[in-house]
Length: 382
Image 1 (cartoon, rainbow, N blue to C red):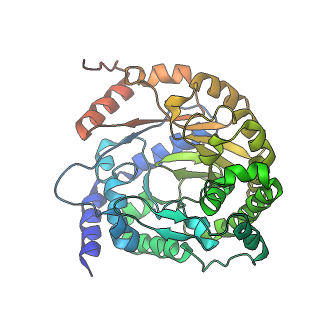
Image 2: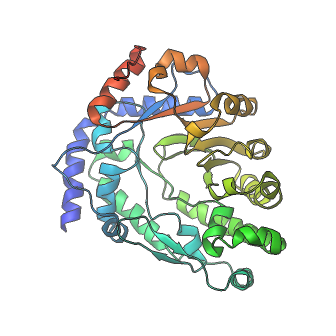
């Protein structure tokens, strides 16, 4: 047993007696009901907690990328929310463990080189050759499930399961989630590089074909990865970004925000819609203001949720009206702290919504959470 394995054991020894399974089940039920537009006692709120303390030290990301045990330490301490502290807060955060190998997992299946630079997340080097490389990609057989980073993802999931085996409450409470699989257009941008935006005009048929090939590979990969997932939300629902989302897969469409509505409809929509049809349901994530694509995205029959990376950039009341008409849930909404009272925010969004609050420190998180559930107004200093 190496030092990282011992550290995982020490953290799990600390967490095991603190896990409240009844609370975990209740929080999952609240996420499930909200995602399905069912009545809720209040909207689920996830507090993103920083890790504070000197008992344990997270590893630099390059070390975690290379070592499954070190990655598990980081997921327990400094994931989207610190599980180490969340067990004491008792908010609606699920305790998620993710194989956090970055955005290049699907791109790596096509032969892209993944590099970890200094302290940042992995960088994907575009394939050399531009449009010719994309044509070669289409001519090659579909990659196997032993290609690229996929074996590393499976090794990480095995590490999670092995470490949790002696801890029955943690084993039941912790959610093993899908890694970041991006979406067809975001992966195409990683493979092609920025020149893909010119290719929308210069070689449109090639762009469309590449997106469909990526969607085809995602359809092959997802069922294998779902064998590794242990989630408590039910069919067609999952945990991502420490929150409940709808859809068997969460399509990351950050790159799509950069294109016009007509380009989304012509190129990206067919690939997204294909995945929704073949998989049965999808969620869509984007950062920034994606309002110019929302009406088209809502035309996808299998779309069941939006996951908002920067909700403050959106007109949330307008978005909610659009999405609620289709019963498409909105995950990870934020509201001003002064409005973060359970009754007040539920009057604005009766259901179909989950909330997040990014806490500057643990003490503030406990205060905000207490005031949220007790419906006390939150007074902002200064």
